[in-house]
Amino acid sequence: SLSEIEEAFRSCSSSLQSLEIRGCEKLRSVSGGLQHLTALESVELINLRELRFDETEGEEEGEEEEHRGMPWRRLAQCLHSLTLWELPKVDDLPKAICYLTALQSLAIVTLPLKDLPEWIGCLSSLQSLEIRYCKYLESLPEALQKLTSLQQFRLHDCNEIIKRRCESPDGEDWPKIQHIPHI
Image (tube, rainbow, N blue to C red; front, top):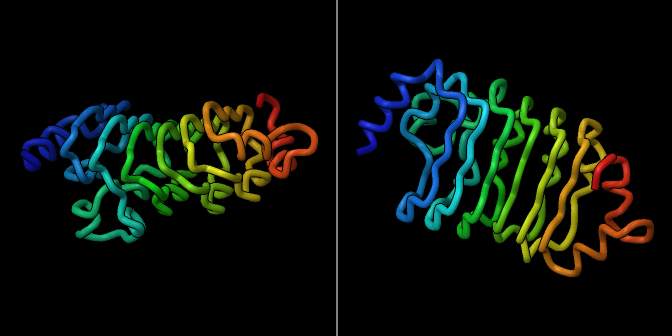
């Protein structure tokens, strides 16, 4: 039950560094005690067919936050790695991810995203960005140019439109990623 999960998270709040939630087919929201995980460095959300993120999820602080989903703000200083993999109902990244200022690695795999948001430029510590199997993604945001810490960019098995846009030297999106050492 949700209360048991919350109690389990509370009991390991200062020691749990990595959390993987995989294959929970009926899971609609990631909440219930995650705000207690103050040492969490890595989160992997994988194959969660019903998971959705509320547009304002994690943006407001307060009592209700723990019941609204992922507590992105509370993870801002500790979370270094985030993997979002095979989440068919997530067609937009929650804006509150922009609060993850310590995030170094972001993997987006098999999400029905049409675009990456401009606020991705706020992830100033991001060193690795991986995008795979996002067949609806057609372009990259200008904000990628702001990510001066970005060392690695991987784009695999997406549609032909974005592949062409990222080609050196004439692709329309090439100027947005040309500063990245490993593409």
